[in-house]
Length: 336
Image 1 (cartoon, helix red, strand yellow):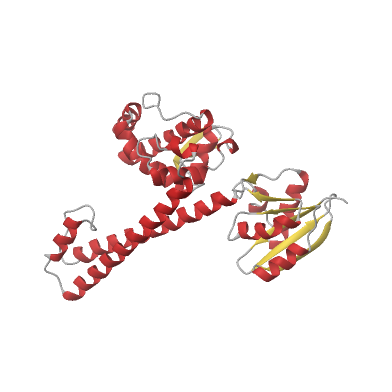
Image 2 (tube, rainbow, N blue to C red):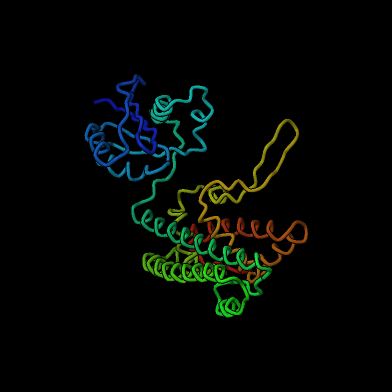
């Protein structure tokens, strides 16, 4: 039985697919609903000689979980690298799905890593924590906005601290504003409990893992950040170099060249956002405690600014982490 290749263009309500044979001829082309029943019906129509490819959008992992048992292999295209689709003048769902299948057939498909189930569960917890932390920050900013409207600039850096709460109680402000602030504080208290609960769950999932224990030796990388870095990197061997890992973090500069001119811009911000945030936060502590990183931070801060220095140290941490995980060695402050 000859090999067949199926490209699926995933959308919120439906999925468009194209199936081609080993010579590139279209065997069938249609669409199915992006829901449990129709996905199962589509999966049951596939056979072990079929190889499926999708782009990493929406609920693609859920889709692959139901398709994988029925087919020979599943693949995920790297979206930034599938330029033949993005730059095509014929931008239709059917064309996109066919080109995905064609790239897989000829062996030119740039692929993304498919994380195992335990990593997916951990990433889900990490993203939920990230969501809760953002909500907490929004409520804290709301309190500062409400107090500022009445000419008050809170002296404490954390509006949720006991000192800040005592200061807020003494404010002479309208009752409506006071009630709004109290609601924000209650929401923050609830979010604190939820964040602590999910952090305990995250730590139970990774406690004792050798890679996590290594990551914890980095200044500024404690339990939660080590779990975030571990979950977002996954298998370190999927990165062929430290530069590849740094690129995945989105902490490398944007470079454009034309003729003899080269233009360097800000960081790309492509790749894992939770990993990028965790590294930048860790860089704040590492740039105060690791001697070489301290010197690096101060040198760049003097020439540029503090933000650029933090990003540079975060990029350096990504390079260090690559070496640590590949060599199975803890962090060495002087060798950083």
